[in-house]
Image 1: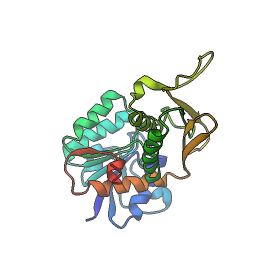
Image 2 (image 1 turned 90 degrees about the horizontal axis):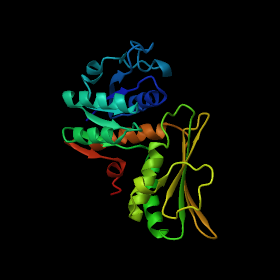
Image 3 (image 1 turned 120 degrees about the horizontal axis):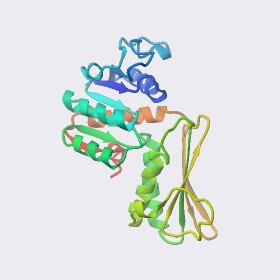
Length: 267
């Protein structure tokens, strides 16, 4: 079966990578390319940036973008993704969501939508990152006592949310493995006289600069040794390949909320 896929945020860095990846896949077809009204590239061919003719024009019309689609891949902003998801329900389209920065209400809206359509929702679609989540779960259980945990992440200067969705998911994985509530133990910044470190906390440090695609390191700092688990992305193509893999996973499935651990069989 050929997967008919629409891409949201078609003119952005991630959107362009997704378009190339879909066009290069033997089992996928690009049928929609969506961007915001007023974007100067609306009306142009979605593959023009890479010198290919897709026959699909970039549109700001959400209904038109989804008219022929079986799947929508969305790496945009929370408010846009939620609007797109409502349209997916109207059109019977399954959704792969890599957008980050959702608040509790946004996550609840995705959960509700997944009762009516199939959704893969993950803060990071890269296969390697999701393998890293599994490694962190194992490491946290082994190093549950006597080790302080810090998460350091770095991204490009244009990223608008911090910490990254991937870093937060790492924190959730670690906290769950340790039987803690991340909301209670997370420390998102230190300044001034902070006092001695609470050993139950999970610290986050954020770097923004240049064109860093995405670096994440979890440090388990003990007495006399330090263990670091690191994932570095050098290209957004890893996210695009993961998103396409998520579409393949959703094919033939009904309603339900899944993540990349489901897609990769890591449960």
